[in-house]
Image (cartoon, rainbow, N blue to C red; front, top):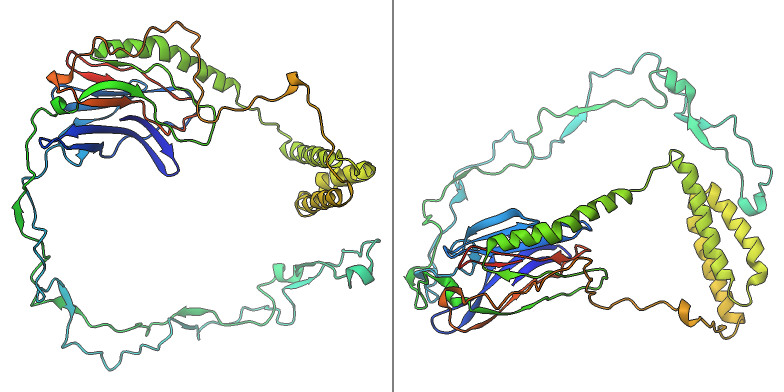
Length: 430
């Protein structure tokens, strides 16, 4: 299985081989530390190349991202270890694997005070000259005035806002002076005995090794991967807008490169140019535009709510009120507009009766979005891209059915375009 997988924290390009053991069991071999998936909205081509010398390559957009050996980079390994841990071997009860112990002969010094504080008052500090002991750090704003519409019965007693005392800004400080603290030179913290080498330490225990009864050595693993009998796309997604096309299986590396150049490269370059055109321009008067757009949003939301039967009488009043509020106090929009809309919905549910049915003309009905995946038609003439007719069995492999997949939970918005290749005898899936 080969392909991009982006789901939650998972982000990798899978390469999984199904290897047939001598006993007939088929085991999946997963590539270690695979490359990551591109997360932009462009079309990308993922290519896997498996060479006859038992090496592999993974390319993304024709650029090599991972290369190595089939024998070294897959888990479980193609060839198992000759020796394994004895599953029946257990650690002896008297085995000591603690390397360090507390010195049993160490004792806390008599002058060690564990209760001494980390910091103490600086006895040498002196109150700065001109310190204003009788001045508060904050005072009522003398220029503040009670609003004309303030109602003490409803709003409570009005209190002016507090500001920093200007006398404190000009002087060394105000209020009751307190001594600063400094690190305590006698502070030592909790006492612990020194650690020494454990005289009974025997080292880290490991089970003894025995010969692996399932050991084998497969020098030509490609012979046991099976033929590629089909090409499929495995996908799990709750999003829309993914497209998969141009899956190529071939034994010729040059052909895969030509497919990338002729069918993917022009599309990719065109998408890059379109993406540049979609970059929004930033308005210099961003705050003003933000307030205006917020007000428009609230107006549209309330107008939509008030379009329900039975609520039209409240429409002029609430639209004007909420629009004005949003343009001046964005926080008030959050705390007031949402409860207001919920209140309107409650009124509607209580007094309006059944919801008026709306008849939508057939030509205006929305089409349902595809539930899993769409296949995008190419605007170029693409030859038959899945070429199995000219692909011989790998190294004379036994006819074990195997599927090569552009496997993906791919969340790259535009899906994988695929093409692939290798020299004679080489299998390339892309």
